[in-house]
Amino acid sequence: MKHPPDTARGESAGSAPDWRPTPGTRAGDRGRFGDFLRRRRAGLLPRDVGLDPGTRRRTPGLRRDEVAALANMSTAYYESLEQARGPQPSASMLAGIATALRLTPDERSHLYLLAGQAPPAPVEPPGYVDPALLYTLNALAPTTPSLITDDLANVVAQSPMNLALFGSFTGRPGHEGNLTWVWFTSPHWRSVLRSLSPLEEEEETSLSYVADLRATLAQRGHDGAATTLIRDLRAASAEFAGMWDQHRVATLHCPTKIVFHDQVGRLDLDCVFLSSPASRQRLLMLQPVRGTETVNRLDRLHRLLGGGRPADDE
Image (cartoon, rainbow, N blue to C red; front, side, top):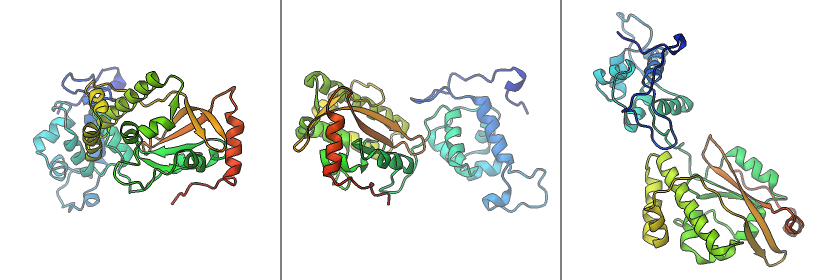
């Protein structure tokens, strides 16, 4: 059997031209992909996957035909992948291999990246909030209006000051708790988030939302939640539909915003994002612009709220 080149000896495994990367990934590497499959297969015992070890087994690991059966593919195709000569596997094929080899979440992501595919989005229960981001949101609560969204911009947690400024997003029906949705469907929301240069900044923010959603769609593998949101946005907003057809891709950013509160007045706020690689959720922090009275006004708002209380982490 011909093994892939050994990069430790200075040989280059290379990237085959027919292993095309999805957005956000590099070209797949056949050699390392095949090596990863062989080593994970060798590390599994038949009993790990519910198979009878039998009495005529030469090696303690699984056989290729056993992995192929568990992955619901032909033995010949699986063998070609291990030997670094098969065609690029689809996302569904990778999912079958990951299940057959009992890969951990980190190993599963590594498998997809070696194949030039975007790893699937983590499966999270309804109402899940990333613990690390929630801790940061609560730690910043006295000074910084903040919220946490998933990668589709659905709001999952808000600090007390964020609630005071913008109202509650969590628990709203349909897409009403989604920041991209309200931006494109609610004139009131745009009037709340005023910009220094309204028309120019509004267009920039709109394009940023669309480009970020385009990138998220690819990262999620065009799953149902993403495609449903995009379908509904196209139907609800001609502006979104026109920008979506431009096929721009970028991560989300937002310019300085001006927010007015009836008790503390004008707040000049810069947007800062913090992303979690574990959950793909994001913490959006609205920080005071230097040289303005916003720091003192946010402090006054915090005191008006009674010092605030931590966001619910249940």
